[in-house]
Length: 531
Image (cartoon, rainbow, N blue to C red; front, side, top):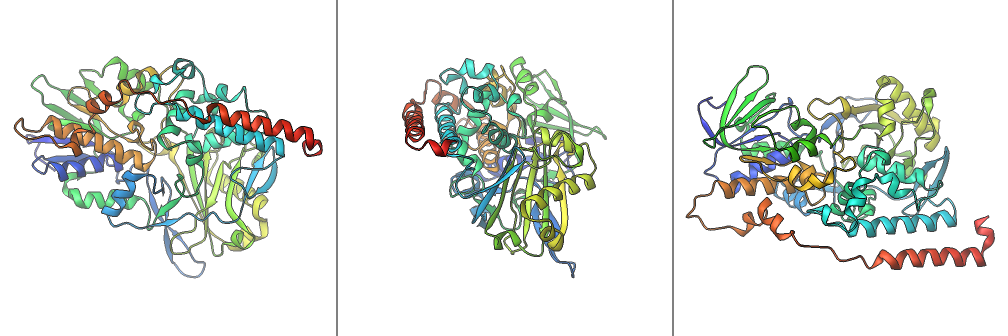
């Protein structure tokens, strides 16, 4: 631990991917600057967590599984580049075979990208998806308030956006998707924020699928927490202090910053601070002077999602033998134990790179708020009832090895997962409230990213931006500019996108007209299909 009187150049608060990458980037590009990372938890990794689970009945053999963020894709250029630098390999998510949809308590198998209930509902689903995609395509990622109809979208929830053009048959499917991606209900999600989030990842379809280029395309061999652990090795273990939660940050008039920690009241002095922690975890910190009103308001109106992740390991991937992919999307309409809603939101094949069979899934949104209140054994029992409905009770019982779960709602210094979501009427402060530096404070975390916000890729993107801001601010005047650094600062990106507007998507009018026309013609010439 550094001496309390020592002046440190940069202190990073938070040892998740975003904070550690910021520290690593500073060490790479400005090795003369001293860096220290403070982490409140007893581990690094933030919202990534890799654990050992049993992979055999007979022997005490284990394999590595992720109970936090885990997927990457080649379209995520930031994390892909970092994985190559850290020499971490990936493998493809298994998605061969039929998937299962549980809607209105009915179970259906399907082979397409979305469930086929009827021709009319399927055409409507395509229409809805393309309309969502066209709306998201018109959102400006840097400043969403420059989007057409931004004020209207900011005032309404995603449920309101869905209501005029999604009928009851497909509404549960969209609700399940929102719970899975955002960890909340459509009624709780700011419409403009939801579209911004989708645009940052390249569209809603990319967020929900496991095909090439989509969010669930690949997994990291050995688990995603390795990213943070390897970054610590490169930064230096003595430069990362665990179990050091920050209580107070004072910015003095002479340009120095004093950080006080909880417990032993240790103080650190520095010139710059990077806050790489979730927005909700910034709120409890005492600031002198206080953060500007626009930042306080934005942070207060960004609740984190409700989320649990679970894993069942098996001695055999029996679902593959039955021609199933292991993927299930559910609206929670089947509710075991007499509760108001079921536990299942999303399930997918979780088999590791070593071949250990597993099914992993999520309990999100209202499902999570209900099922976080029961015991671990009750959750396990409820989920097993769901799995038995999908795959057959005898197969589940015969091949089950172990059950593990992570209730992210109870995780200290996280308070939920997978990301923070904006409430209605709050997006006017989005850019300055989340990204704009305040004096010597700089703001990272994946929620501040413009690319793949909420994902590991977004964490790297935000870490790079804040590292660039700090390096430029502390750079000697006689040192030349470096485009690889300067272009990523808040000031330069804000200037670049100040007057930029995304042109109207060519699909905005064409696709809805085509889909509606096909539906109308099909109903005229093939009326029996719609009966």
